Image (cartoon, rainbow, N blue to C red):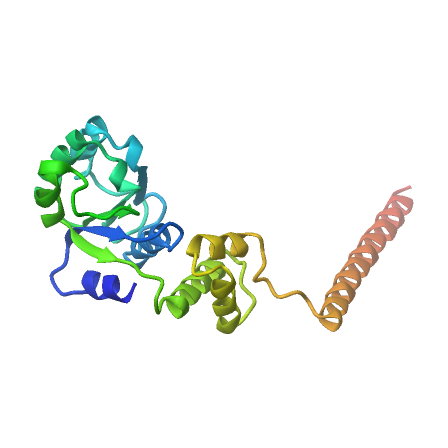
Length: 232
């Protein structure tokens, strides 16, 4: 992630294409999504596509729409994430060659793949890879980076409550699989349970609030009855 941050933060960087390669579950899509967030792209400005659904017609459709304005955030940026990009057919790659050559400003395409790039697309392979920046992910040394990323995602979703060391243990027991770690976050595993004293205080506050509300309603009822009697 640090490599990507340096890249997109580089002076003059205003468009490009990344090819992120790594084992299943290592966090390719999570890193692509984090990159979109780093460019302040919300869900309207982040488009995800499955590689096996990214045929030549889909690429032509992107060619027609990629230059349009962006709804939502992103400071004008739009990020396209093509997951399992190795599943794209050769004709789609040929169409991508033209699109990447004419990529508009503030557009970033991120391809993710589990496959080696040596000869994925036959004769189109080298021209295609020449138009992308290749990033190879390895589980070696990524424990802390994955932990920080998992914690950031948990905080954003309101599912955080534990220190970074707990996320490092989570990544360890997940055997370095970012996908497995994020599944645990989504289950609420990283929410810190309330201590008995804290829970008791919360319940007492809730009860006191309910009591005050009941007293207020009772006063209003007595006042209404008094008013009606006076009118009679």
